[in-house]
Length: 124
View 1 (cartoon, rainbow, N blue to C red):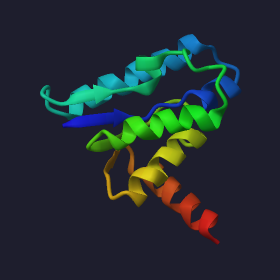
View 2: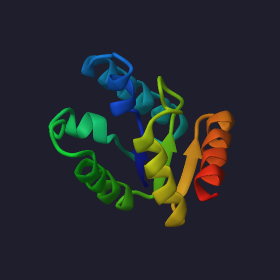
View 3: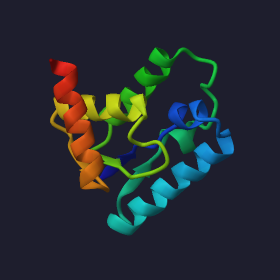
């Protein structure tokens, strides 16, 4: 099983942190996934896989790459990290996964509830 680990990037930078903190949070997300899933699962983190290679690309282009990677995974895992709840990228990944019937696991029921509430507001 291939698991997409959604971790904040732009939301962390926007709040004054460095790319070092972004990578640290992504590493923490991977660690939490390792604790939950079988060692036979392949864990994929776009933040750790690509680093800041695409930092100068327009957001829409980066998200296309993320969506393509997400589509190739079996499950979306959303760990509770610094600025997870205000990450537009994670929210967009979740909306796509949900629309495509992808399995989704939130580390926190509270974060799942916040995303569901936001979706209802967005649809109004």
